[in-house]
Image (cartoon, rainbow, N blue to C red; front, top):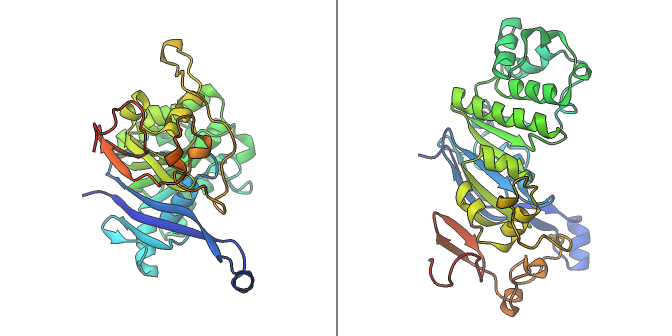
Length: 327
């Protein structure tokens, strides 16, 4: 049984007041996330990938109860989170944790490291003293002497490790990490990747990684889902997608990813143009205005899911496959 099952998730944001919308004859809200479905098994890692504004963080915030789903289902540890009561939500929250994007800004400057990493325990009515803080810091690869420091005394990499220690305080079964390597130099990013892999090996926690850093995705995730304008366009095993992308948007993201090995660099065209507004979505395939492989029918027909090679994708003319060879 999967730890997390998301099925046909739709998330909306208001675009204007209801009265103004009625007077103008326009919709009150717009869809930020459309028809998103995925599963995540215990001890596995899924990466959500896409440009800024693609809906990645909106999905994560909804999973954590910070944003309400308009429709669809989210089943976590056997409980339907969309319809869960307040008491049920309190129980579920203790089993999941979040690593925020800004490693320093997400830490209160008035609290010591000890108070920061044990705060989740206090919030949920559990005891957390110096010994517990030292244990958590050890798991995150920091000396126990750091318990008395304040955030301004930490480097970016050290602050990220404190964030990891804090996220592990309640022994979660699901860890959601929003851009865990953002703002860090390349050498520190490598340390964070190794830390995340080590944490998962030692604890068995499942991880959902929200990022545009494809090097992170390649080294940490088992599977990945590529988002464009709030919709998944390709899903499947990470290795398979990196080796042979099916969707042109995936191909363009991989082409834009820095690759030091010239033998592994992609010769595919890079992304051009701007991401359309979800308030004014293109017709047909929403990627067609930016797609170098677009055909005339891409502008009028919405692509449906196709399957093959342990993955699925939405494209009328998929790459690296003969048309009709996969169903």
